[in-house]
Length: 114
Length: 116
Image (tube, rainbow over all chains, first blue to last red; front, side, top):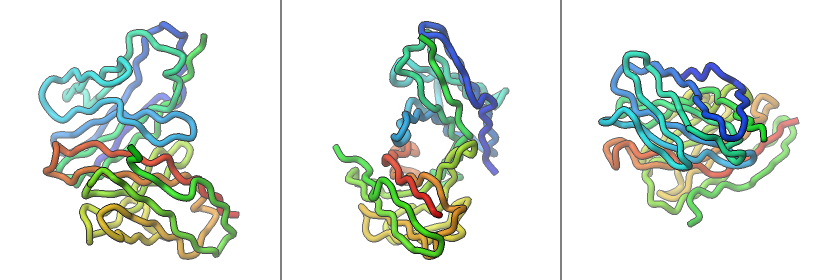
């Protein structure tokens, strides 16, 4: 069965500081990996995705993530956080074998201190 | 661009009442999904429809039924609501496997349901 672990429930960073959100996955084949962001009262918006190829993927809003197969990880990073980045972030895993049914992590709530 | 539209946005039900959550997408996607979101549990798949005319159970289907009315619309029905079904419900759509590299899910803004 596929699964995703986001070990940090809450993270607080200062505006301008760097950010790394952790994601570990379990999947029996080549995974498709995603990061989504959810602002309060909103649906989920795709930040970036990894299917194959270059293991460092760039997304919207200055976010990037690196796929490390040996560590089963897909951590999300941003060099300099803005106050508007405060939101909840979800990592998800899926693949062709899963029929595009994504499994989501439990989310990391990001707070940005001014 | 409307994307994925869910109605209603909010609903309060009494235990035992029934209701249908509506979802429509205008992106010509083949696949549609219903997830529920609960604090500390992320999103869990209730039902999905890989294409028009097909539906399948997800991780937490008990207490729910779905109808893929046409390519655009995918409804979720609670026949006899229970307090455990208090949650935020999200509809999503995407291309099916094999299309556009397993394209990402596009989400609606959710329906917040409270069952008392």
